[in-house]
Amino acid sequence: MTTLTVYIPADAAALSLGAERLVAAFGREAEARGVPIDIKRVGSHGMFWLEPLIEIETLKGRVGFGPVRPEDVPSLFDSGALAGAEHPLKLGHVADMVWMLRQQRLTFARCGVIDPLSLSDYEEKDGFRGLRNALAMSPAEVVEQVRASGLRGRGGAGFPTGIKWKTVHDAQADRKYVICNADEGDSGTFADRMVFEGDPFMLIEGMAIAAYAVGADKGFIYLRSEYPHAAKVMARAIALAEQAGWIGENAFGPGKPFCLEQRIGAGAYICGEETALIESLEGKRALVRAKPPIPALHGLFGRPTLVNNVLSFAAVPFILAEGGQAYADFGSGKSRGTLPVQLAGNVQRGGLIELAFGITLREIVEGFGGGTASGRPIRAVQIGGPLGAYITESQLDLEMDYEVLAANGAMLGHGGIVVFDDTVDMAKMAKFAMRFGAEESCGKCTPCRIGATRGGEVLQKIIAGERVEQNIALLRDLCDVMTAGSLCAHGGLVPNPVLSALNRFPEDFSKGPQETVAHKNAAE
Image 1 (cartoon, rainbow, N blue to C red):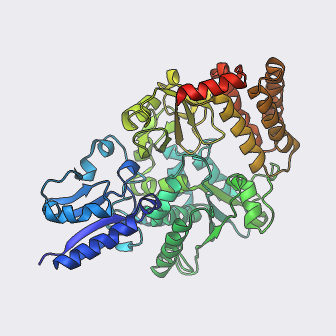
Image 2: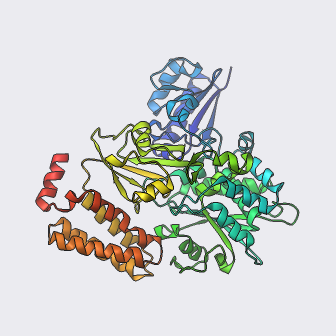
Image 3: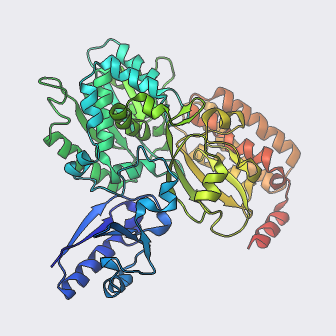
């Protein structure tokens, strides 16, 4: 009898929706029917509204079904769907779905397809080709390929990755380090987690290429503590890669090591800032450092240190496998390559979409996302995490491009997009931003530590209808001080959501408490 092969995601999104119960249900049903079964665990394709999305190996390839619950399993057997027959949950070939066909998956091509802990699966899908190519070049040539690709940091500032690599490459020191900033704390972001849980060898390969290029022999992955599944998968992937010789004592040849460690943070949002992260890695309290000196010259333990985030390192294997120009052929203007967009909030079809820069927000939110889950009109969209600006529905035709968004008072950040319908109270969202900024401040500089606390208090007075005009003027002054005087981007960016809400939704800041209640009741 032919063995039934079923692919079930082990991604945290699928696990939260019962993927483990689904594994048990398939096992029980197959045993009761005397059907030999092979259950393979994979990552997620990123279509979260269809999770758990499973695939069945048929004579016509892998066929998707979703969302599948344990109670659906008997009908999948009874209908003959597992052999290719029709079923209400049948999706067809996942790669042929419109959601997938409209994407340009360079970084996430393997996610949902391979067993994340199978080195053979990874290598069959072009894994380690980039590292092989890199080791056949000089370090300077590798840096040049990254520069030519136009890759920019995915952490917020969009700094050219190749320039950062060249700075570390050119620095003279007895030792250098490579750090992956995986402290993914922005609301509505999950791409880093998907890399860890769906294609961890890609990150390891990207970091190995970077270490070879800049002359580092030690790397650290700094992962947020809220990702226990990701931590477990990555720890196993590092061990497997070391056993296979891709990293370790002779990674780049005899006596040329690259050793990699994973460290778990303690839940501080500020550790997304590279110098606070470095302080934490050194065993200190996570306080932001003043710059200069920059980490590229004086970083971990005072040595030149390359710090990139997950999506930057994850893009590197493709660049070295296909060439910098192949990556630069995607995108628009100075924003080259692709961006993994994470769509969340009040949206029908949330998930991860990888697209070339230049697509409009409307195409993402309405085309991929299908509009709001509530069916009500879109009122606001926040881009770039909790410190990103809010934009209005009329601005959805803006392109996803670093310069275009910056010119319109917004930022790309980590690629997170959160959608709100017309029931949202933007004054309360502004207050949340200030309170969040205060709670997550490292406390080192006064404009951030005190400014965010006082900002929350002023916004509470505005919401209560107390001296609204005077308090709004005070709020604007306070935001100016925070923007100009904060030591790092945390305090400097907290005013972004506040001022964008105030400037674009002024009507929400002029309501008294009674009007706020009436607005809420009308929305309900």
